[in-house]
Image 1 (tube, one colour):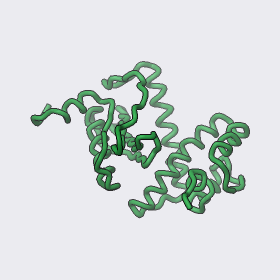
Image 2 (cartoon, one colour):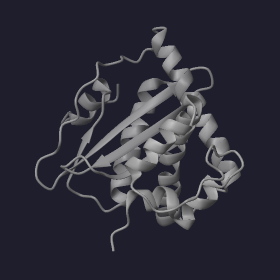
Image 3 (cartoon, one colour):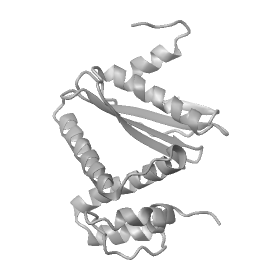
Image 4 (cartoon, one colour):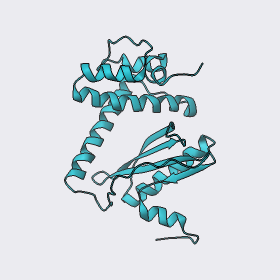
Length: 209
């Protein structure tokens, strides 16, 4: 029997300890099996906007936590988990504020483009990085999708002591390739929005600039 999205993110015992945490907006909700769309509709009508924002981050990190257990044999305690959720949401909100005020810190912000599916059995690997100039750290994000747009795997991780936004993008690309290697994906198409990094990687000769 195939496992449903709702079971993996909501009703399975591996997710129950997260949703039952004291800081969870749905701590006392019954974790019965249901369609994910209906569950989200229920949240949307009964939770406040700030609670919904937390729920979105929790859903994403529940999946990452699950991947960590399966692929890296690592486990994050629910109390630590929610600290990470709050920090992640705060970082995102601060990044949106900086972008809105025009502070790009030397990184060119490209216009939104529509995701294009890969051809045949090739899978697409999107990677990106967000750099914090004040404390020289960055966040890495990787999403792997098939030709139908279904998410096969995703990853996010921090990195300290990053002194340049280009270095952050290079590390994101390296982590995306490493992630594919860990998952035994060979037919991949890597896609990122850091033009200088993409051009350097695609050059036939070595680039030390």
